Image (cartoon, rainbow over all chains, first blue to last red; front, side, top):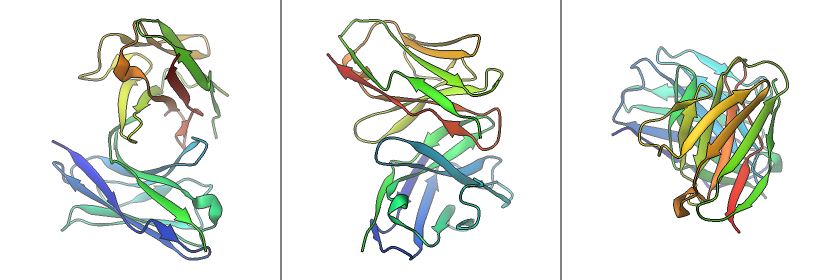
Length: 117
Length: 107
C-alpha cells in the first residue's frame, strides 16, 4: 500500500524558512512518478506548489519560484519542501502527493503550519 | 494560470438526494479535469480523473461529465460518508490549478 506522511514544525516565525518532509512507503520516489507539494489555505483555496520528478529535476509554481526548493533523499525515500521568507499568508495545511501523469493519486494526511511570531 | 470557478461553494443536501457540483475553466482544458474528495479529517482522495474516469474503489454513485465548458461531478444518491469537501483540478496547462471547493453538508 502506498502511503505518504508529512512531518515538520507546526509553527514558524515570519521571515524564517518552513521545512517539511514527506516520507513515502510502498513506492520508491525514483520509480517513474513525480512528487508534489500542495497546500490548502484557511478559507479552502488550494495551491500546487511544485514537484520533484523521479529523476530529481524540479518544477515550481511561478508564484513561489523565488522562495521554494524541493529536494530529496533517495536513500530514505523522502522528499522535502523548503519555503523561504514566510509570512502569515503562508499559514496553511501542507500536503505531499504523488502525481500520476495527469492527476494526484496518493496524498498524505497533511500537516498544519502556522506562521506567527 | 487557468482559473477554475467551482459552484456552489456550499451545498446543503439530504440523504438519498442527487447533487451536482460544477467547475468552469477560464480557458479550454480539453477534458483534463480531475475531482477530489476531502474528508473532515483532512484525508484527500481522487474520485474522477480526465473528466469521467472513476477511480478504483469509488462508488458508482459518483460520475463526472462535461457539457461545453462546464465540468460536473454528480452524486446520484447521497450516503452519509459523502458529506465532505470536493475540489476540481485542471491539468491541461501549467501550473495545475484547483477550484475553490464545495462543502457538501447535511441539510
